[in-house]
Length: 295
Image 1 (tube, rainbow, N blue to C red):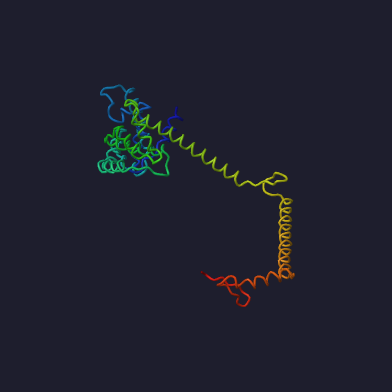
Image 2 (image 1 turned 30 degrees about the vertical axis):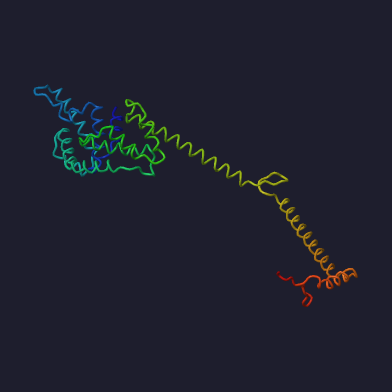
């Protein structure tokens, strides 16, 4: 029992600043209730007049237990404010009065934070919804109520672009099922589906890309070309270039021989062509070059 009591106290975050107060109050209130001390701390249970010593001792023991919870969950700065207190009720009231002193100003700050809240691209939907609910909780601690309808509207209006279709689907849901819990669970389920699809698309892309870039040897079927195939291709290319060079040389040689050919028939044809110039007016030879006139 003592070990469990100690563990429960150690789980409470120490009260250090005004920002820590809502969470601290929430945690210590639960611990007080779990050990039957909450009514003593809040003043709803007081020591009756005329009780016997046994009842008085038991009440004081329970009050001391509540005091221990308070003094072990605040820092030294907060501890100085309650040194003069004689009961857990006085300690609790003192701490609450100090940290709730500027509650109106802090309430305005949290209201602005709620209405200006936007989706952070670095967060997932679970974190996004949780952060918004934390702001709402801080406001409720300060007696500023934010109903679930406002929270639902805020969540839907701040969804990232890829979840905008969800708003239409949600509006088609039966009115009795449009609760904050249902919205949260459905959004988290939709996020799981969306993430799973993105992962599948990424894997498929990498697989297709890997197959397209894979090269295998025609001889051994191993990835990339083996040395034997590379050597064979090199020899093949050399043979092709060598053959191409021989063909070109033979072609040039043949053309040269054609130009040097002399035959009487060639001379006769040339002579006939020269003699036929008179039959085609507008044509004449100049320095052995045939010119065609434009009619």
